[in-house]
Length: 183
Image 1 (cartoon, rainbow, N blue to C red):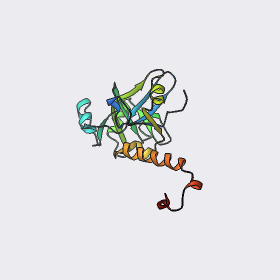
Image 2: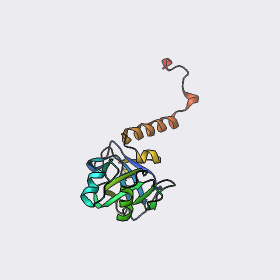
Image 3: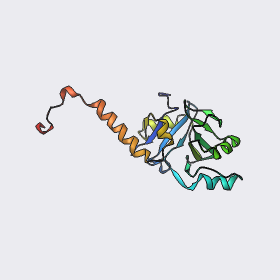
Image 4: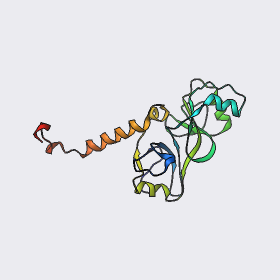
């Protein structure tokens, strides 16, 4: 395992061959030599959280945000949220991850919580993710809490930021000309 990925995100490169991940931003929640696990942050579905909640339990959900496609692997509903009173596994200083039904029910009725709800997840077996990284299928980036909870076009924003970072570190200002028209 060459780099620590938990807490960082993967951006599908233009060379990504898997249509499940085209233009995806995947938050890596767990990463080891045996397995990696994450959630696609930028694939909203046509379902809202309130619609899903009405289908699976008898609560009136206070959130109207979309349900997100977390990845091609079937699994329980998973939430990322910022409410320390709800519960879940602390993911960062300000975020928690849970699939516990009691935690989810609390989230559905907590107006103050910022939450993203996911159906499915992204998973990789031994060596699989490293192989994809080696072939250039993914770009690795840090990600902020605001970006994780964002509903904006995250892939475009993050690819541009990475591009700017690459250009900034690759430029040798001592060798650049003062006036670009001299080129």
